[in-house]
Image (cartoon, helix red, strand yellow):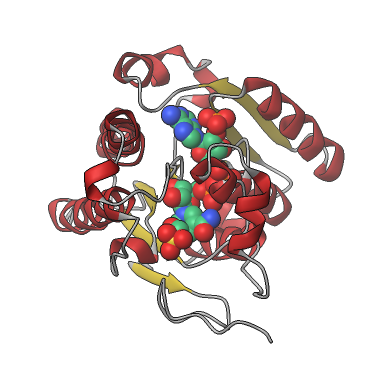
Length: 266
Ligand code: NDP
Ligand code: 8X3
């Protein structure tokens, strides 16, 4: 917890699922002196989460909800300069915003779905990284200059039918993460990749365009991870000793060993 004290943490996609849980987990781990910038498109949800965090841990954590669509390059470009000065010295960027649309195979994938997945999961993540990195590089003082924590997926390692575009976006995240770590080798910036397996969030609801019953069927007779499970790993990586880079993590629930290798309860 001490290692997080005084830090400013930006989380994208904090209105739901893994991002939301990560906000709570950072606040619980370092309740005395922390600044959280919570971003997503649904600002009302962010405001509620900000209130709930302060209600739970007290006002030692300053929480700023900011509406931000990571797929909009103009919004990303002005994001840092629009922050109040006391939130601009970012220490940790959690690139978590992401989504999947549909289960169509190549001939049928809608152009709009292709574009939104790449614009959010890939270009959005890259643009956010470019927006925040100058702050880290200016800080280059021989100590920890900052953390970039990119949320990939098992889907980026093992593509599956019906996930061609989503899997390609997550493979791109993995590739960008690994080259970034090499580019920043001398800069004391930790570049951390986290690849979850199956986690029950709004992910499948979004995949099935809001059809909750189809989403629920994905997890039937299984025991998926909770978003808190991934949040704990994210906060663990950010709270290691500065010289420790948890570069690459793959996290499954007990019944899963790949996207398709899943043990269902009888
Ligand atoms: P959720 O759908 O619950 O959360 C996704 C978050 O991303 C929401 O807060 C959403 O906020 C945000 N988001 C989506 N599009 C944008 C955008 N254009 N700009 C800003 N924020 C956006 O799903 P998860 O918590 O599961 O997903 C989080 C990450 O984890 C994603 O990158 C996903 O690919 C990854 N992941 C998920 C797995 C799973 O099984 N659930 C497994 C492996 C990886 P809003 O709609 O308010 O903008
Ligand atoms: C989510 C995991 O395998 O459902 O990233 O696509 S999977």
